[in-house]
Amino acid sequence: MDIDFRYVLQIIPELLHYVPITLYLTVVSMGIAIIIGVMLSIILVNKVPVLLSLAKVYISFFRGTPVLVQLLMIYFGLPQIFPVLNEVGAGVAAIIAFSLNTSSYLAEIFRAGLESVDKGQAEAATSVGMSYAQAMRGIVLPQAVRNALPATGNMFIGLIKNSSLAFTIGVTELLAQGKMMASANLRFFEAYLAVGLIYWVITFLYSQLQGWYEQRISKAYVT
Amino acid sequence: MISVSNIRKSYKDTEVLKGISFQVNDGEVVAIIGPSGSGKSTLLRCLNFLEQPDSGYIKIGEAAVHAKQSNRTTVNQLRLQTSMVFQHYNLFKNKTVLENVTHGLIVSKKIKKEAAEKKGRELLKQVGVLEKENQYPIALSGGQQQRVGIARALAVNPYAILFDEPTSSLDPEWVGEVLRVITKIANNNKTMLIVTHEMNFAREIADQVIFMADGVIVEKGTPEEIFDFPKQERTKQFLREFHRNTSERMDAVYPMDYIKELVQ
Image (cartoon, rainbow over all chains, first blue to last red; front, side, top):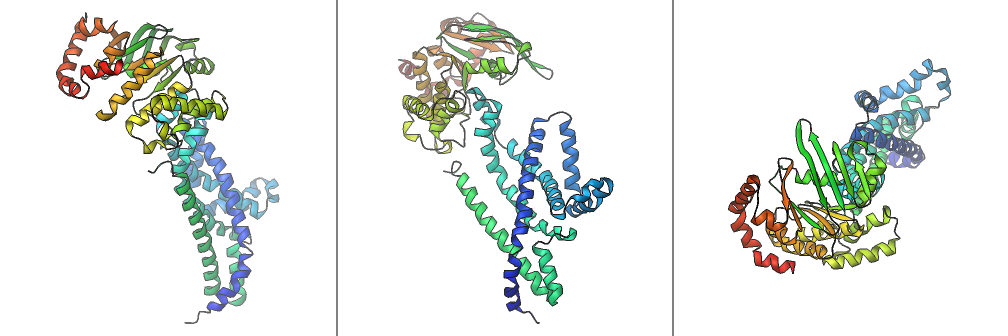
């Protein structure tokens, strides 16, 4: 047994320089995924003709194929068909792939969130003169968000870790740097352990934040 | 006034409303009674287009809609004429008691927050739940929730208030306080339509009683005409059944004297 814990601690500061890149990939992808997911979920809930079928195919495809396959398709595959896409950098390609993939899961999470709000809430809003948009904004969405938050948080945690796949197309994020350091020093276990610990800490901190926020927005629902 | 003519509504193959027509004068209180499944609630929900009627004409206060030519604007106009009190209260769960009353005023009537809150507090005081203004609905009893529901419905100052079985899901101990509040509003000459199973209450509070069965209005008239001298066999049968099934229980909880006392 030869594990050099001092080495683990030693490389962590160096690795931390790449955390912003991991977070950048994750947060931007999540933001875009939420926007697409909301639009898809509204299509699903309201059963908008034509768009509903398209949304279902989209969701089925992006949930039904591995995110790595999607990533490789977008970065290496699409430029062969549309040469103009050769200009797209690896980071952007990764964000596109993660956004599309995550949005398909979020669409279903948001749909369930919206449907979990009792119909009587929207009816009551309507009966005191609110429009559909006003009822959604003030009454239905805040309740749907609360119901959808735990599952959405899980997606976010998944995305933090999935962002490591970006190294396969040459984005130097946390894992890629760890891999380089591992090969340079031939200390594979220590390097990957350091990388793993950093992911763990990030997701732990995020879980704390979400727990605090869930409690905050739940105060109306518990006596 | 309210004028409804020939409302029809079907779900798939079942015709729930088979051509309903009636009129309500300003300040009149109308009780709609009838067996379960007779279409009472559906009728009420057609009046503010929570259910879209298939055909017919509805005029409430200033607004009129032909069901077949309805569009978003005319439906919104119609909805502004009424507000509804629900069987299951349907208070906004994410809003405090005061916000439940003021939210509609602020977002749909564009009233300033301070003014809305002043009005909201007045109404909460009127229904006797002012001390709960900062609580969320979950912390309230059924009776308190329903009284907030009534304050919310009053806040937007509609031409008429629609009560959809306002006491049906309340524990017996809370029914009295809600009926008392409704009576108070009726005494202020508010136009009201009340779908209810509280026969004693209907008799005392209503100017007009409508008896519905199987999607049609079987009989309508004054409370005396309906309850004491019903003409139709269907009405007689319903009242007989009603008395046989519920008189002991109902009279134990809301004896006639008690209801009379409420109404005074």
